[in-house]
Length: 282
Length: 282
Image (cartoon, rainbow over all chains, first blue to last red):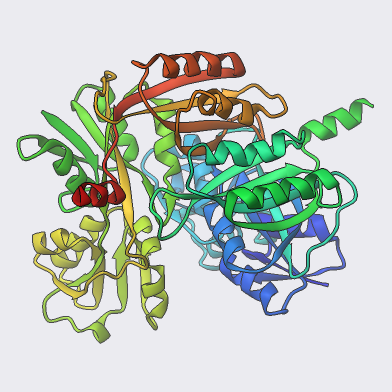
């Protein structure tokens, strides 16, 4: 099985892919999110994995937009606790560091730490693991990367400071995309995107479709409807699967109220930390 | 009157500030969004102006987060049609261009144009007008900026190509922030942020508070509730003002369902292009 992900070995997306697909899958790095969608569309990979949301920085708009642009299905999800480290060549002292490189999302997640530093230039880089690799390959003794401990081990960098993220409750949710929708038996979740008709109370009525059938709404995200200023597309994640009559009926009802509805996929939802704690208690 | 904005002279935020406050206001540029909020909080400006949403790229998360972090009020809004131009030193030919500089949002708005170019490096810069200034000051004959025609005139650059934005319906909505809430008489709009109690159907119930009172919901934006993974803050824009009983009652009702509610402000809503067309027809 070939699975593609954004970033390079040592990145969080690679870790998420490994977590979903185990040791046997062949993992293929991609330059950016768009390339992941393209690689799966062109049948160069069975599945792809991309981040969609982080508990500190919020939704990743580009992933939502790419879901709409490509006709792929969400077939799974997973989440990772994001622990970030300040990595440098062994022997580099904290006071030697003049430049810090990392991916913009990772930099955003350590804003407090970065603001606490004095005169250090912060540079956005396309990938956390790639930043670590650059420090090693270009032997940068005045620079550090912010990346995972795995990326540090991979590129033989020392951890100058661990856990530099601003919030401990820092998780990223990743989705798995494939060409064919799957069925989920355990804990199914369904993702849908729609554009409501331009009527008063349209969004309220669209949510009523689910709430009146006791279907839990887990997430709502709005994105602009291109070409119609101040109108929106809504992405919803709801509990349940179209195998249940009430979910199918809710989706039919949603179509009555919308100019466009697309089911993005049904998949087994990832265990959240709270779920795991609840399991532990049992 | 002193009004601060993000960017520098020639930027779209400056144009929005001029549009709201006229020729007499003294406009003060700020390095970033956070500095705008800080400058107003510290009484170094009467008001500040920041973009909050674009019809192509969607909401600007940082502005939402800064609204929560600071105790300022939204006191106005305006919108601008964003027209982007490829600007270069006079004499530069299109085939000479090796590098393009602009602000990330502006780059995102001309994605189609940038993808149509061959071997050109695209560099993110902190401000559109600052990119234009750099081309002039550093006499870069192999580079271009993407910015407004105003920025081009200001820095004596030639328009190599006009309207490079991917979509004509490209508008940015800006909000005006101040220390004291205002009252709006004509076309009032109210912005509110809340965190619903963690109950089934919580968001649906929160929207019902408005819909059941025939209060139009114009915009919903969700942001993560920091420290509580997969729970959200919701920002709503609704028509009406707390001067109307039904709005006050709806807000009281919302408090019953929420762990936290804050009214961000009431202000006169900006005319949309559709409003203007409707006016023209009258």
